[in-house]
Length: 218
Image (spheres, rainbow, N blue to C red):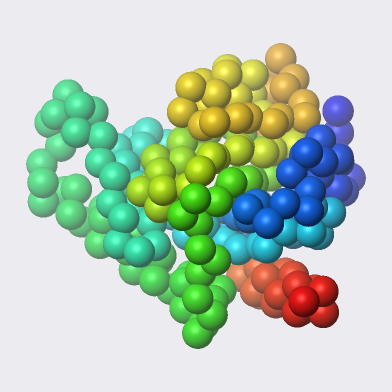
């Protein structure tokens, strides 16, 4: 299955999430930046609030795809102590990685939200959306961090993903919805006709557009 672009992928994904439509407990979170166009299309179809979930993976020094933890908004910090011990990563090096990612997290928070408060997540059913899953390390870090916000359930939803990654995430999320799991996966972008980079400006525009939609409905 191929998708024209992230918006079309989001619409198709929303059709498979119809059971969550018009539910007051549901909130849709997009992982910036590429997950936001997908999440926006999902939120509109489900008539649900939209927000970003600001999380930064803490990559192992020299192996950035391998997550040793994550930091998230609200001061949440999750560390994989077993992995850190196994690789003998010194505390000072961990703190360097944390600080670098904290700066980027704060930059995105100020840019994407401004004075707007995050959507409450406690006791909500959270649909966590990205444009695809390759290694799944960022999504895994997001799930671990999101648990600290005490949602009722976490539903991972993506248009396309590597089969082994989708299977692994089913062990840590409450549900995983993945429209396409091609055996010869290779990379997320190969399954889109248009996989151009999502910009910071597009993220802020999508969040503002969904907020206007909700205001009109209320």
